[in-house]
Length: 305
Image (cartoon, rainbow, N blue to C red):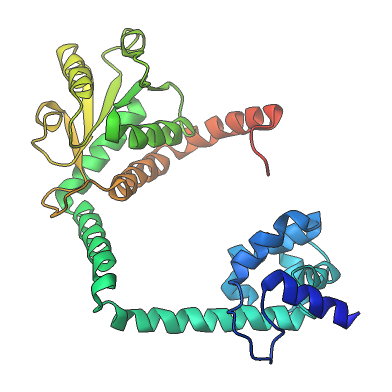
């Protein structure tokens, strides 16, 4: 029996059992789980999900403790180790512990690697992102974010627009906002602005995403909101961008950033702050709305869980 497991272990992972020298490095534990996941039983999948989500804690838990947290038996945990090609649960746990140790060592050594020319390319990008995110915590930015939160909570309808490079962020925001409140509409790239804009009132809000190169279509939508007395929020790269100049509330993500491109990462981080602010201030209504939404998700089997 043990020989069989040893053979499976060697084949599936492409390296010899622990204690023997091999040329190939073992797969990362998370990748190993991913590669075998579809072949696991339902109970083993629950254990695998728990291990991936709580790997630092699980590295020092017993099979019984892991099973209890994953709501399965201790035997199921042990069987998972066999299914992943290990000869025992303790061998699987040893792998997890070793990998965590290697990751910690790598994190330390990366400090030295940052001086290499190849690494400096990525280091500069990360440092630039950190600077942008720090700027979001500026008191002026925080004040504007809370203004946006209040306006979005009170709005009877919200129309969101973003074209070209800005469309991805607009879509993400409309989806996330739609999970916590009703009457959120996104202008699609197919050009349905007129029909959606026609139904807005003076209690509505238009949110435009406008990053270089600025889309004329987005700017026209912003101008239409101003002309019709509708509150306009712009998510843009600078206060005096074409949309920013005419907006009631301007949320900027890359003001003074020395970057040749606009990062969607910083935009999503900004939007996360807005979503979190709405959840904090409108929590009771959001919970009622999400319960109704979850019932619909369940009825129509929207998610594969």
